[in-house]
Amino acid sequence: MNFHDIGQAYPSFRYPAYGRRGMVATSNRFAAMAGMDMLKRGGNAVDAALAAAACLTVCEPTSNGIGGDLFAIVHFEGELYGLNASGPSPELISIDRLKQAGHKEIPRYGLAPVNVPGAPAGWAALSKRFGRLPLTDVFAPAVNYAAEGYAVSNLLSRGWQRAAQVYSRYKGEEFKPWFDTFAPGGRAPMPGEIVRLPHHAETLALIAATGAEAFYSGELSEKIDAFSRQHGGYLRGEDLSRFDVEWVDPISVDYRGYEVWEIPPNGQGIVALMALNILKGFDFTEKNDVVTYHRQIEAIKLAFEDAQRYVTDPKKMKVTVEELLSDDWAAERRRRIGERALEPLPSREQDGGTVYLAAADGEGNMVSLIQSNYNGFGSGMVVPGTGIALHNRGHNFSFDPEHDNCLEPNKRPYHTIIPGFLSKDGQPVGPFGVMGGFMQPQGHVQVVMNLVDFAHNPQAALDAPRWQWMRGRKVNLENTLPAEIINGLVKRGHEVTVTKENVGYGRGQIVFRDRDVLVGATEPRIDGAVVVW
Image (cartoon, rainbow, N blue to C red; front, side, top):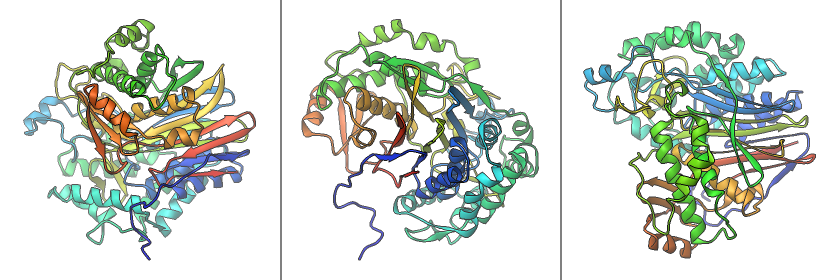
């Protein structure tokens, strides 16, 4: 028998999950169960989401970590709140300094792309404002998994091995702590192996006990500062100590009677909203129609064209959110969509590593939360003795000093991670999200249209075959798309690649409320689980 084959010989079917008193949907079973434990102990949806988020840093470190960023949309006691817990660039960094160090672009790995991590402050802020249980109790499952160990899944092993291959190309001493922490035997873990992360456990326990103070102005901050100084990095303790999260008002557009909510810039949620604003001017009757796919792809191109020109730290933006989401903007872009594929302004192909989770309790509270180290484990930098894998979010800056999103000190970059939320007539429907770098707004658009235009249930909305626009006229298609769609897009001038594996199209979760019943879904592209009560 082969217990660990990564392939699937046959299609795997799932159905929506139903619950009444609570629901947690994540990309990892251990995390989903940890969230449900909090609900059964008397916690609320925020406690559940935080327990799952902490567990994901342990049980899915290939996609997120303690040293990453976080965004959340919270529906709590009838109100909608937004949290931006993304960190800025260090005070000491600049384009000129990187050029002086011999760089011709912002490096993807190493200490140069490391911004201030915002996730620990985000956890503490959410717990303080909305949580019912002590953060030490909420983080207890994650601490236990890190200390006692857990079994690695097939997909997790594959991502781990990919990261080990990437970091092994770099011979600097600063990369050694990653291998000491995550590949102590000289290799990434295989499926079914037990992994223990004792330093990770200690760090999570300390963050919980101090409300993240130790991370930003205590012993963890000192270790981060010392590691950065030792290896020529730019991040300092002063950058950490002056950081604070930002509570923001979520932004939205009306899409055929539903309000689609996203976090405002510096996040790229506005891309999904701009694309939906364009698409609502068309009538869609058939999902499996080449015109449907063609218009979706073209709308995403046009939304990205402007977002990648203008979106950055909101203090540095030269256009307003209101302008980008105006009907006039949408109408002008819509007129550019014809029968043939457009060639938009140049953009970069990117991948990403992110986790998305959704949680709800029986009292009507709901959480849409996403956190990320950006490229897999992130920068490849792990602070010795802490388990803190630092993200490489600074790679999202432009190296062009004339660009709105250019690298500058104390600036938040264009950010890929986006939590979504739906409401109708002012009443919450619930959280949804699709992680995966620049795929995320594309996934949001496709899932929303599957739900609203094509009346899919939440599970089918996630299961449906996806496409991903890459750059120019290049678009990747999942191999489950009908041949007539693939051929039809080629005839319209799209440069189509049909991928052998359905990897790179995002990984999503949904938790919706239908009257007194919760309806949830996760998708077969991940090891996800929906745990219900």
